[in-house]
Length: 218
Image 1 (cartoon, rainbow, N blue to C red):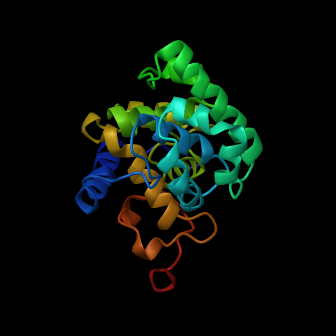
Image 2: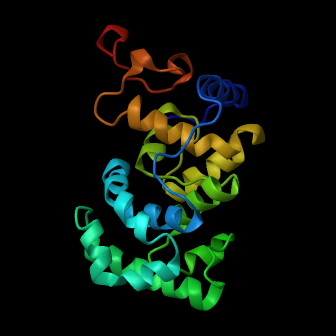
C-alpha cells in the first residue's frame, strides 16, 4: 500500500483537479432527489451509461414515489431489465418508494441515517445523494475511488470506510464537496485498473505509485 501523502502534496493534487474541472458532475441522469436516489440504487454493479439508458423512459413516467408505486413492480421491471440484478433492485425500489410515502411524506430524507433506513440503500448510496443533491461533503467511496486513493497514496485505507475517513481527515475542507467526484472520474478515465494512463495524469509527479506507465505509452 502506498504511504500517506503529506498535507501539501494532497492540497496540490486537489488544486490541480479543481483547476481542470471546477464543478465536476456525477454522470447519473436525474431530475429530483427521488430519481437520483433510484438511479444510484440501480447503479450497483452496473454502469452509469446502462442505468441512464434504462431510466430515460422510466423517469418520464415515474419520477415520484407514488408514481413508482402506481407503475408497479412488473412495470418497473420492463424499464430496467437490461440492468444487472434488476429483479432484486425492482423489489428494493418499490419498498423504498412505499417507505418514503409512509415515513417521510413522500420526500427523500436529508440525513444519512434516514437514507440508510430505506431498502437497498447503503452508506455509499446515501453519501452520493447527500453530496449530489444537498451538496453535503459526503464521500461515496466506490472501487474507482478506493483504487485511486490507495494507488496514489493520497488517502489510503484498508477498506472503503477507512478511505472515506482518510478523505474526510486529510483533504483540505475547500476541496471536500467535490473530492469524491474528482477521484471517481480520475479513476474511471485516467487511473484505470489494469493499465493506468499515467502519461495523461494531472498528478503524475505527486503520485506514489511505483509502476507508472511510460508517458509515450499512455
